[in-house]
Image (cartoon, rainbow, N blue to C red; front, side, top):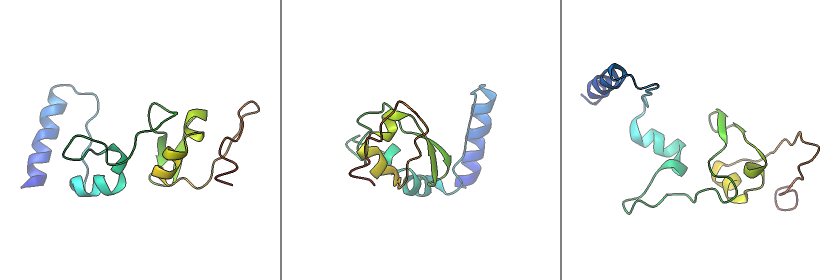
Length: 104
């Protein structure tokens, strides 16, 4: 029943010419498990803190494995911890390795 309703909603949104519509096959529980940082609690507060330096999260290239971001992302220790990032590849000549001490 839930899948049928999701499919009906998908078709309705596409008919209204929404650019992109995606369905999460595992439902909200799967989404929350993978993307806790995008979810709110009952008081409308984020379950995980928002990025401090960066205005948004880095782009996810491979789910939970590879992200693409800029120096704002690379210098935000909270964002790095939230996303579980363990390595940063810096290819800039002008951008310092901000977290080299705390995240060697």
